[in-house]
Image (cartoon, rainbow, N blue to C red; front, side):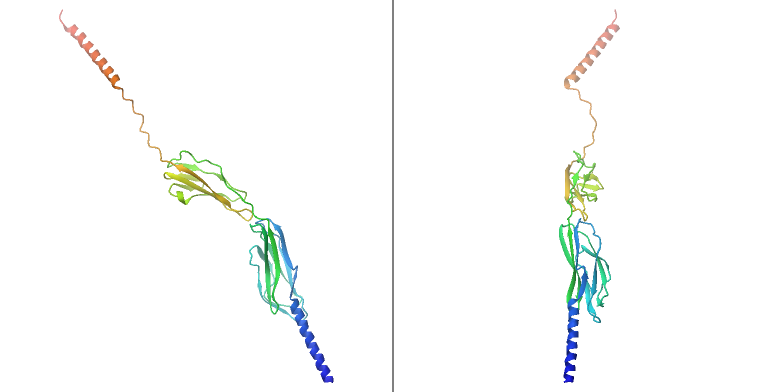
Length: 265
């Protein structure tokens, strides 16, 4: 009887130990806080870091084993500091992970997780939530008017104003007009007759979308021919005849007077 009672007691102890282990395993990792929330954040800006403490609080001497850790896949969430890694997690030995949130250009919520693969318990996660106010659109306005005419061999200083991102407006020649004109900086040079098309682009950043491309087009004309000078007008036929008749009359009068002087008295 005593042997039977002893066997029962040992069995109960074994069952209790097994149940204790299962309870510890079922509890798994404790995350404090259980999730990270980044409130509405201006697009492109980076939030202050927030931290989570990770700890196993199961009974001694049991140790929880973490086979792998997986950071968030979404680049909006960044792990800036972490002492948590794969391996054994002894009781009451915490580690810490710190996150920041970079709000994307698209407005709306963003969700991801930091995952722990725990032996016999599967995946346990720290939930990460963020929200972006969204980027601001911007546009380009041309501030200069191309010359008219725009002859081959000439040039033109083009100017445009972009949005508030602070990024410069960059000019380029549209491929359709590569043989007609060229641009260096903001100076457009006229190469041949045709239609010159200049593209203007402005990049965005986290807080501003890239501006839609704007175009300015104008006609390039042939270079003017050299001026040969102004020829003297050719006298009309009547004027020539009058000059000739006057000359002949003057000569005849001279001859008559000369003849009279030479005749004897």
